[in-house]
Image (cartoon, rainbow, N blue to C red):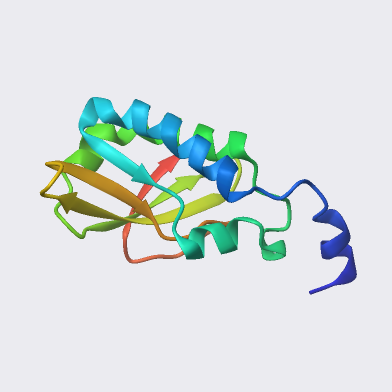
Length: 133
């Protein structure tokens, strides 16, 4: 990593408490589709503050990506099968959030489990992209 990249990466890191609070808000939004949102997995938490993102990922950016995806693709995501994978892509911020959809039979609802997050243009994946701007 170059020194200049480290110096540019000085904004406040996101804490687990920040992510849990965001997750609660996203759960309320996605509950309209009987979908739970899980963004507090270890790899996601580790990667959110990674200097390789260049610019620090913000809570506002994450919230906006999920809101845009909900508005544009909510019903399409709901139609995915158990263990289907996809990537939430925001072209404006270059954020990519790979996820897996899991069905929880105890709660009788689906769960979007965000696996990781990265700021990367032209992210390549074999999985379905849910792209917003």
